[in-house]
Image (cartoon, rainbow, N blue to C red; front, side, top):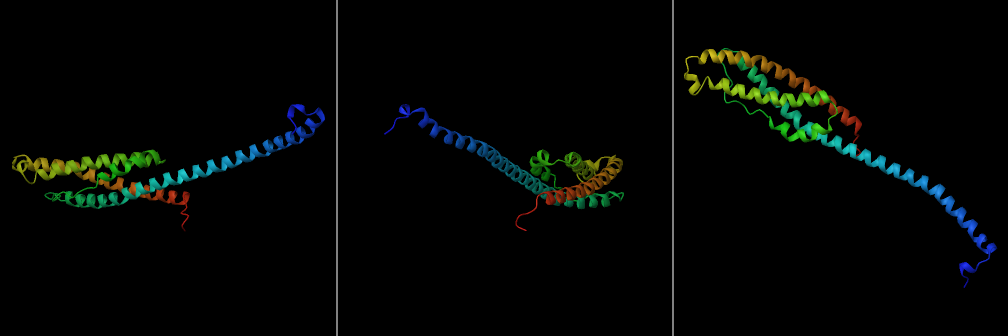
Length: 196
């Protein structure tokens, strides 16, 4: 057995140079190759994360769109009832205001369209106020407030406030539904489904 400290300089350098070149060659090839593989892995992980976020946003918009369409139908019924002097919304249909509460946790951080994000938040806030005004308006047709002497005057005043409110909400919903459809189309193009 030969000990390394017993080697002569010739024997030492005979083994040293090939090992040095092999080590340097491995480092010169291995480090860039490793960095390239790491970059590919990071790019793939980033793409997968974007696709997951787009899927979450698409699902959130899928929750909002049908609720807003149902609300639009109810707003149009309210518009029709408010266009008649002595008519009111009977039974106050259930407007879907909770859809925003369900979806906003995904919409707010993931939606890149600022105008649509602000429009959705504003719409559901205004919808809650609209429903409260409708309830107040209906209260002057039935129940204790209907017995007041000024009930007819108050009903007319409330109706005059509710008509433009309903018109504005209907226009807002139609615009937001178009914007949601455009955003969903953009998401579908940006995130192709691998199953198809």
